[in-house]
Length: 173
Image (cartoon, rainbow, N blue to C red; front, side):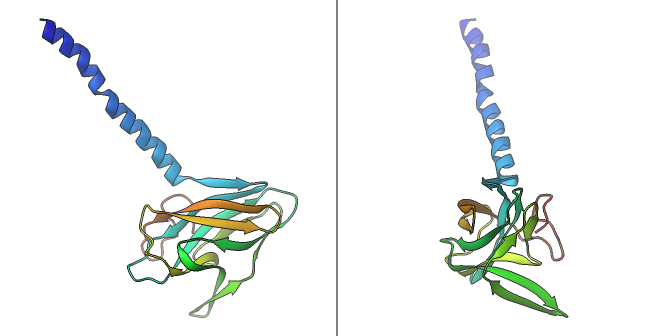
């Protein structure tokens, strides 16, 4: 009788680790899905990169930058230990030919939102130290002319099917 009474008291405690694991899983998932950073009046929303195949020499980082301030700012430098060099790029289509070129900076007008995505402006990682693997976080420092520097983490996400415009959330790349 004493053993059965003790066993009934112990069983509810056995569920506690499961409740904690579920709560931690939900907390970690929401952090991984929606992450943003604030630097003065600039908001950097969901920096991310696409996974690269073994042997790839370059990769891209994408994000949205919103300027809620009354003055313009300019993204003037991007740095990361994930690559030998990091460049701001502009991509345009000239007929059926994709043209990519490095740019000196990216203006963020007051009240504007600028999207760095696969079909326009983006951050180019040149000379990758190692492949970009799904689930990894890439440390990146964004330096703005007026607001200064902010360290962000670009989460590496899976490649999407050709023609897809999403990266796992409601944002467009």
